[in-house]
Amino acid sequence: MNSYPSDSGNARDAADVLRHGTICPHCGQIRPHRPDPLGVSRLAGWSAVLGLLALLLGGLTGLPAVVLGVLGLREIRRSEGGLAGSGRAVFGLFAGGVGLAAAIGIAPFLFLHYNEKRSEENLKQLALAFHAHNDSTGAFPSAAICDDDGKPLLSWRVAVLPYIGEKTLYQKFKLDEPWNGPTNI
Image 1 (cartoon, rainbow, N blue to C red):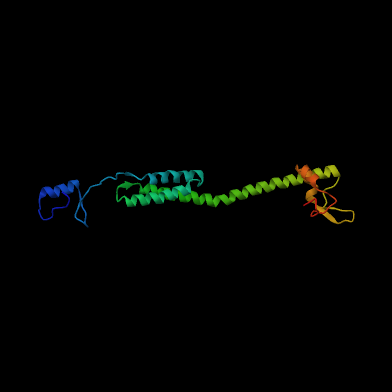
Image 2 (cartoon, rainbow, N blue to C red; image 1 turned 45 degrees about the vertical axis):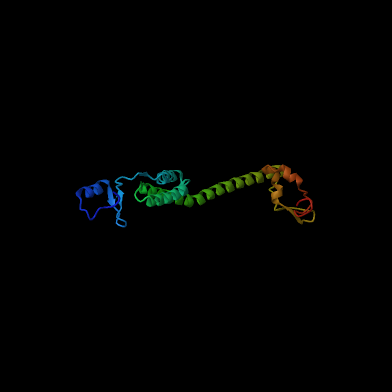
């Protein structure tokens, strides 16, 4: 029995339709009942898992959760009731989006903190180098290393090189030539 026997009025035929399926309003064919979905979309499930991880790990899995959520919803819609899991897909989309937004919002502050720490360490190293220069020469480095006529040749930065662990680089400089001289380039 492929279509509903509308003209026969047979009670058994009507009972078969109710028991075995529904009538398609477009073609009159009997379609089997699917009271329960055949399964849950795996894409939607993974979207929910990755979305939860994105919330817990600070957005690391946020983008895959959003992508899988969109693909899962599309798969569920195309299955015409054959797959469930739209709630999982929506949760994965939401949680992944929130985790991703948090990661994008926090990331610049993390890099800023890293750069601040690095700058702080560099300044400490320079301060120690200035004091070490003072201890060994009796004076802090001048603004420039000058020739006998008072013409500046090299910056104070060259003078502190041996005190910041760059003695080899310091020895490569010719202190009687300007910074752009043939040897110092």
